[in-house]
Image (cartoon, rainbow, N blue to C red; front, top):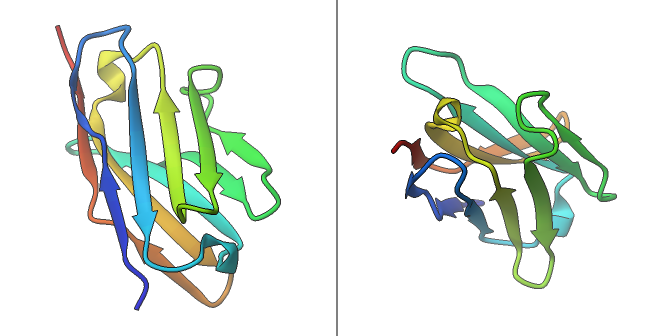
Amino acid sequence: QVQLVESGGGLVQPGGSLTLSCAVSGSIANFDRMTWYRQAPGKQRDIVAIISSRGVTLYADAVRGRFAISTDHAQNALYLQMNGLKPEDSAVYYCKAERVGVAEYWGQGTQVTVSA
């Protein structure tokens, strides 16, 4: 069974930066795409950023230009570099690894709080 474990969340002031990590128990080369989601209290879980197995990236409008998604195949890890953080970025962030049409695997989430 594939396991994903997020880390790197925490409390940061507005304008600050955080890097989230998602460690995968297995080769990330096995997945078609990997995605960061976030969910704020009382809201739906939304896509933040996607990276395909070919390295193509997509970003939600709210984070484009501030966040960067990347992978490290040697470490079997997914990252989300977050800069210029805003209070509205506060949420639980989840990573997902997916074989399209076959299976998907989720992490347990990591809390990001942006507050002065």
